[in-house]
Amino acid sequence: MSTLLVIQAYSKDKNAHLDRLNQHFITSYQQAHPKDRIISHDLTKDDTPILNSQMLMALRKKQHQKPLSSFEQKLLCEHDDWLSDFMLADKYLFVAPIQQQFLPAELKQYLDLIISSLAELSPHKKALHLQATNRTYHRSLKYFWDTYRHKHNLGNKYLQKLLSFHGLKNFTTLHIEGLANCCTSCDLSLKHCQKQLTKIANAF
Image 1 (cartoon, helix red, strand yellow):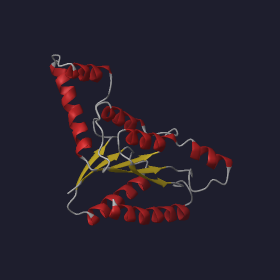
Image 2 (cartoon, helix red, strand yellow):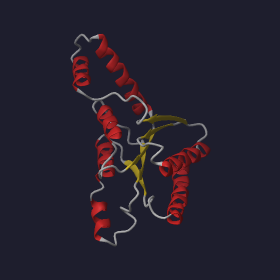
Image 3 (tube, one colour):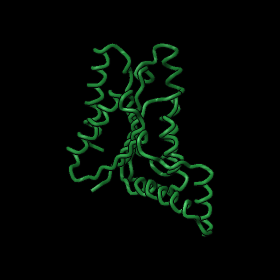
Image 4 (cartoon, helix red, strand yellow):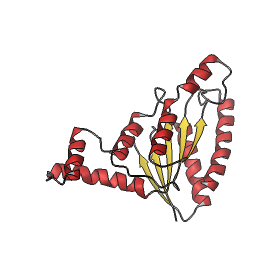
């Protein structure tokens, strides 16, 4: 039995299409892997600890085996809970829109927290990044701005490089694009993505 950790960093009210595809993948995954365990973190709702000066001080004290205040003990307990979920997972699903050519602030905050104490990841682990945008970044490079946006999609590159640096090499991205197009075009895009997600879920 494997564990899938779902990390959501989007508002469902503003990203209905992305949420629909996220749920489609989870449903397809459950059907293909009925014995697997799924853990979900909604970073827009869950109270994710922040890697600030207080957290860094607590981590430093722990490393040097110095006495901790009750507040610092509480911080480390929360930190360890989040880190434990990440380390115990065999597979990761990151679901987020592009924001300012990068990742949402909630996801960057989460990654900062996890990476601060992350050991080497098993090479057998794998990750999938569902990245959504109203524009077109990758499916068409016909025009200058398509090429420009493609080169400056920094969020996906950052996430892939960060996980690769810590040992995770099996990284897949599905770019969900053109969600602001006309209804017909958007529906076709969603159906195409659903078919792709079903195939990915079966093999994930």
